[in-house]
Length: 222
Image 1 (cartoon, rainbow, N blue to C red):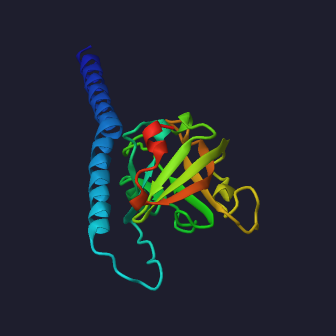
Image 2: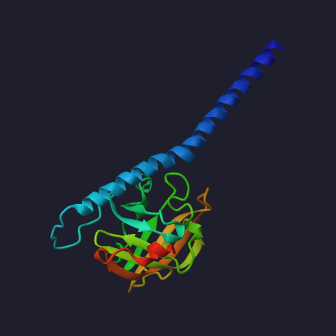
Image 3: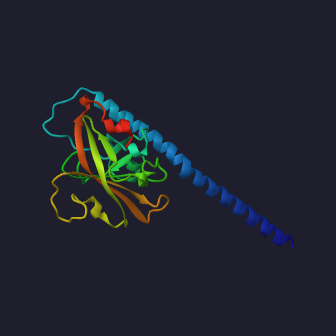
């Protein structure tokens, strides 16, 4: 009988320990990864702003984007006036923990083709947590060093993770040559799983120099 009690006691202690470890892991995933990611996003955003303040240098061509480095900001009024997230070149795990990531082989902001961006919907800062709230006609504003680029959402779609056609120069038209600047935002669906992908498609509606002031759509909140 004593041996049975010892076994039960040992098993109970193991279960309690396992439960505590699981709880700590959940806290790390749900809370601490967001804290760390927010710090990284702030640091990336500060770095972008500092670089923009440096004296402009005359260059023959637009410099290439550097993997892992922030180069712009994205604002989605539908997700709140405070939604302002740095865009980092690359979609590696380390890149997506520092903002939203630009797919390297897709177009740059404002260029003809498909400017495609990915972001976490849960943990690691979860910038696209509420991307499912975005509707057709909503604005997505990208701030570069010189311009405000206002994209307008055309449609949203749920696809399989293997549907990489969403990153094509003209999504849904394999081999087609793009004729206008497009936008694609990607994230996991549902929020706490990765069995699907939530996709937001849009097109560039307006480009204005930053010297002209902040776009009115950012004040309207849509």
